[in-house]
Amino acid sequence: MTLPDGYRLRPLSADDKRAVIQLDLWAFPSGVDLETQEKLPLELPWDRFVGVVRDEPDESAVPLDGALPTTTEIVAMHGSYPFEHFNVPGAETRVSGLTWVGVHPAHRRRGLLSAMINHHLAQCRERGEAVSALFAAEAAIYGRFGYGLAAHDVRLTIPRGAKLRPVAGSADHGARLEELTAERHLELVDALHREAGRRPLGVDAPHGALLNRPGWATRDSPEMRRRHLEDVPPFRGGKETRRIVVVERDGEARGYATFRREVRWEDEGPRGTVHLSEIVALDAAAAHALWSVLLDLDLTSEVATFVVAPDDAILSLLVDPRGARTKRADNVWVRLVDVAAALAQRRYAADVDVVVRVEDARLPENTGSYRVRAQAFAAPSVERTDDAADLSLDVRELGTAYLGGTTLASLALAGLVTEHTTGSLATASAAFAWPVEPVSSFIF
Image (cartoon, rainbow, N blue to C red; front, top):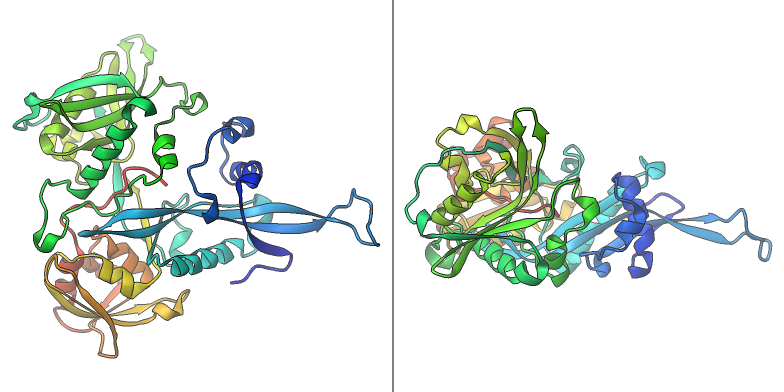
C-alpha cells in the first residue's frame, strides 16, 4: 500500500526530536511530560528513523506569489534497532527490531501504518536483514503484516519466604546489594546478559552450534546499554531508586537481578513489593542464590516479576508452585523478510529433509516452496524447489515457529499448517523446535 495524497515519507534526524516525542505522546499516552522526556537521550539511531509528514497550507501566513506557504507536520513514524547479535536457534544473526511505531490519532485509518510497514520491510531487504522482530503494543495489529507470535514470557507474583528446592553450589555464592548505576554496573550487566543468552545451559550443541536462548536480544550500542540502566525519577512510579543484587562465586560474578521496592504500610504491618526488572544467571546455582535473596527482603510480602522465560529456573525451584500467581504474556513477534535466508541462518534440533510451501501476500517474492535439509544442530541447506510440498503454511505461521517455542504440530492442530506427506509434520515439528524456550529479557 502506498501513502494517500498529501502524505510522504521523510527520514528523521536529531532536529526532529521534539516533534518525535510529541507524536509518541499522542500515540502512547504517558504521565511524563514532553519537557522531561525531551532531555533524555534516545537509544535509537536516527538513520533508522522514518516519519510520515503532511504538508498543509499555512492559513495564518501572508501569501507569496499568490500561494500560501506550507507547514510540515510529522503525523506518523517508525524506527528499528540494528540488532547485530540476535539469537535464533543455535546461532546469532542480524535482526531489525521494529519499534517506535505510531500514528497521530487525527490521521488514523488512512493506510499510514501499512505504508510504513511496507517501507520497513523494503529497508530490511536492502540492509540484508532477513528477519524483523518486534513487541506489539496491541496483539491484534501485526499478524496481518505477516508477523507471528514467536515467544512468550511469564509474569509471576511470588510470596515472600516461598520455599525453594535445594540446588548444589548455591551456598557457595556471596551476594552484594547496591544502588544500580551505569558507572559501576554497565560492563558487568552487559557481560553477564550476553553470556546468559548464549549458553543458558552452560554447554554447547554438536557441530559448534549454541544451545542458546532464541529471541535473546543484546543491547549492542553504548546508548542502549546506558539507557537501560538510567533511573529517571518520573519513571519510578513512586518506587525507590533502582537496586541490583549481584551473586559471586570465588570472586566471579555469576548473576544479577535489578529491582525496586515499594512499601505499603497496613494495619497488619508492612506489605512491600519487590518489583523485579531483570534477572540473569549463568547456572542453576546462581539462579537459586539470586532468588533466595529476592524472596527474603525485609518489609516486603511479595516479589513481582516483569519478564521471565517460560522455562526460568524459578518455575521448577518453587516447592509450592500454586503459591505463585502466574500470567502468560506475549513476548517477541517475528516476521521473515527473506524466507530462504532466514531458514538458513538458524539450526535445527533434529535431522530434517522437508519441502515447505510458504504463502506471503505482502512480500510475494517469498511465496514458493523451500527444501530444508539439515543434520541435528549442523548448518542447514535451504533452497527453492519445484518439488511437491510436504507441508504448507503462511509466512505468519513460519514466523511463529521460527524461534522454536511454538511447534508446527501445535499450529497444525489449529488448522494453520497443512501436512501433505504423511510423517513430515512430526519430523519437521521436532526439527524446528528448540530445547530452550525463546524470550527477550527486555522490551524493545
